[in-house]
Image (cartoon, rainbow, N blue to C red; front, side, top):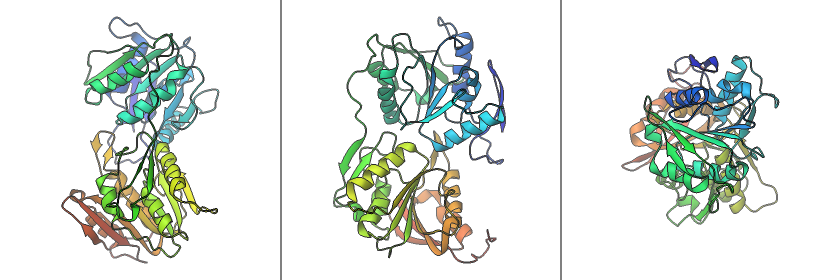
Length: 401
């Protein structure tokens, strides 16, 4: 946990879930730059009168630093991430600030936005598609007097980023860089500024090389990895996953658009499939993908937004299928994947199986062998490997839960 000092106060902040070994802060120079600008102005632009500004919306706040620092002004946060939302709530509580509607509102990218937005603060996301979709969704709610300021690290802000602001909202320029961070200033057009239609979600059909997913329809909301086509890792996974599950309870962990779990549901109508992801956009995609392919009166499927499978009862799952992420925003990290693996072992029944597809260089077989006591290569190619681990009653070298 670290302390962020801002013109609006000083706050102890942490990421979620809290891990004392995690040395990454819950904010960066881009957050600090934006908060300094709001208080004192940047260049020829003066400070923003937040107290008299009206409705303040914070889009894409990664760990709640912006929302917590501005809580006195009753902002509305919009995020696609369950973990970011949980982090914000925890940081607000730590600061003695509640999340009641009269103080701070925490919305998801799937919720209706505020009717009128007077100040829009945008933390530029990694996904350009997600930014595009959210700017289209928010454009009807801004007006000619809305103050719009974006922020991000220099490496996150590209010409394409600025073009989106310009095309969807209005004239756009950037600030000088400070500590490798930059601000984006956008002036909304008098008539709302929206040009064109939101292209998301995108729908496409899988070809015959997609293994058990061949012929299925995928629906991708903005922000899903490889949003307009099937990524090569999932394509390889679909050629290997078990689909004759004998009515098992199967989890599509980190489901993305849900095509893996849907392939199981189509192949085995008796299977009970649980789709989990920390992205609200992903769960919306998984629901749409499932409904586009599974046509039966009694759908045996659950769709859960959360931290991996932490919300599932221990020993309640037969099979977990996982294509884990190996990035946390801009940083390459295996922390999320390793947390998924540990959660999976707890959620699986004895003799339950975890199947993982991953880039070969991640070396997950070592982690699985340490955690489960075993790890088997099911399929491999130069770039990807599919691994299988079985939950034994007492894996060698592992302490019981």
